[in-house]
Image (cartoon, rainbow, N blue to C red; front, top):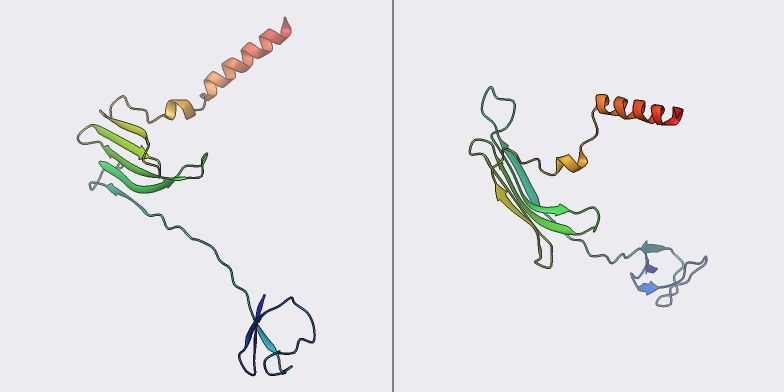
Length: 140
């Protein structure tokens, strides 16, 4: 840890202990502790915006540009995504920091599920039917 003598402003790196005397001026007047932390911070930026028309619930366009954290890898990836409902257009491009294109999709918005089919939960009716089938199988 670094400490600074309050009398002469001499700075010294020391182990923390009681009764320390400044080697420069001999003062025991007191010291100011300085904690130095060396870290690197990364700044990532992105912008999202939506265009809405008055009286409409859903936006006619949604855009996401910039860095996005990929949870599995922990890396920030550059994303360009456009959902244009007026022109029936969907675009998404995802690029890793090393320049590798992970995803590059462009096509009609209609029929595009955005991968939600993989994340979709079963409906309550489907769950109840599955539960009934499980019960019937247990009775046999």
